[in-house]
Amino acid sequence: MPPARKNDHLRSTWTIKEAAQVAGCGERAIRQGVESGEIPHLKLGGKILLPRVAFQRWVDNAGQIPGPRVMLHAQTGGRQLRAE
Image (cartoon, rainbow, N blue to C red; front, top):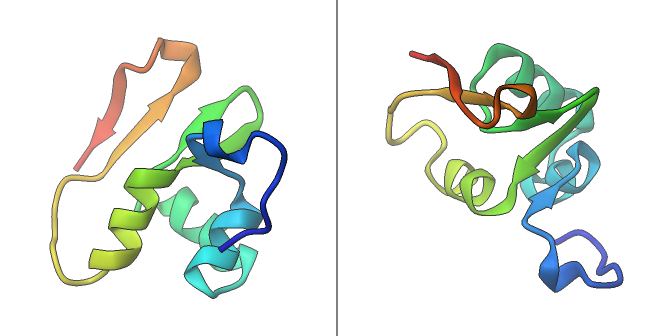
């Protein structure tokens, strides 16, 4: 798990760096998954955040349970922009 930060229990998202630590891979692999739409994420301005629960579920089920991929963007008020 990523190192604890102040008020970490209040955070519902991870950065790419934190998500890479959780998944045990490099940041580049996470970025590629985000860019391809494979990894659930939020874009807030220019910052990419990964919802903790959705990312952990994705890690736990990666490659086992196919399902729709959805990308949300803060600029749209959370409306779904893309689903496959």
